[in-house]
Length: 252
Image 1 (spheres, rainbow, N blue to C red):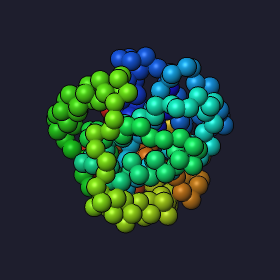
Image 2 (tube, rainbow, N blue to C red; image 1 turned 90 degrees about the vertical axis):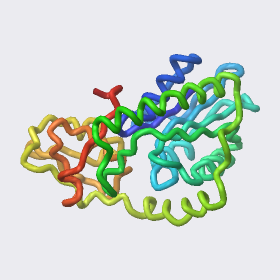
Image 3 (cartoon, helix red, strand yellow; image 1 turned 30 degrees about the horizontal axis):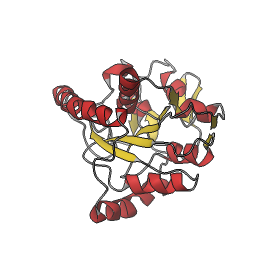
Image 4 (cartoon, one colour; image 1 turned 30 degrees about the vertical axis):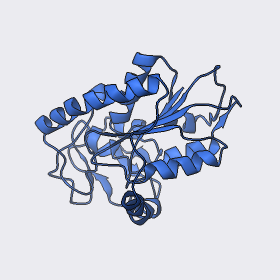
């Protein structure tokens, strides 16, 4: 069973690739949260996987919330793996995840870090289209190696270093306390397609008179609304206007 969360498609692609290679049920964490579905029965000897992107060198809040509510039938010992997609590295996300799992009497057996294409458009311009394609091609080889390891219930690539855990400790609380929505808006290119409202995992966007409005103080900051807008109409303050967008081909 694979639980995944994805804003712009990287982690969805990884989850589907694992499913296609080893066979497994795939559960969308966003949908499960919306439907309050937290109890799952495992088949005998079934592994459990978590696939999600690293945010600020930690876990998206929706992933942490889901795990805190997760109720798996008691089939211990169960092999639990995680594949975390990221830009450069995911800091000490392995430690954060293992701490959450321990709170559920579970243990993280294997953790894999997979650099792909960064979508953090708030902070800097994203890669060009060609650079995005190159980065995805480069990630494919490592993903195949990860899937081979998962298929034999292998162990982690490597544990996070002390410096990586320190980085998470310093940066991740900024994300947890932040995630404000007040800077989001749609410019005059908006054509009222309603996609942003449909895909928002926080359910923070409502269409009002044909325009999106952010109705919650905080969201997950998955940046799906910005990157997946067909008109590139959604902005975050002034910083995103001239920046590249990124959507994994699986969502196109």
